[in-house]
Length: 187
Image (cartoon, rainbow, N blue to C red; front, top):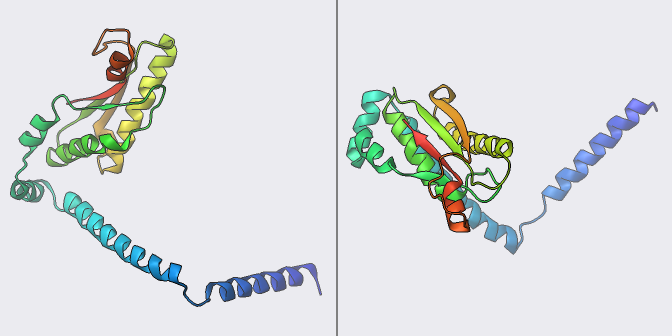
């Protein structure tokens, strides 16, 4: 028997053992995970319908759907004023508590086809100027990627880093630094 024949025999045997191992009788754990699977598919169905609703139709269809929900582009724009995404020290990942801010911005951009956004990244005063500029850019890009994940076209998003410039709070303490680690939206 040749080497390639042995390889094929080994592969068939391995696949056979894998299939036999997968066909065992269900245990109570699998029964419990069945209900988890059911819950997951129910919530996935909800997410799918939400995504379909937010992506369905164009301009007038979208405005009509939003009007029935009670929010127009003007309402969303007003609600977005002053909303920022804050970051942890020396981090550039968008925290889950700020996903609603990103989602609101994506919804506004879906309603207003001509809207362009500039995401501005900021840091606190700690670190060198060069490091803070790079960190501010990573933060702005993280928000940009979150917007893209929500369906916003990358060509409608600009990114700029201000590093430690333009602090919200000029104090030199942790509370001020926490406010200054942010990404802002500018339309």
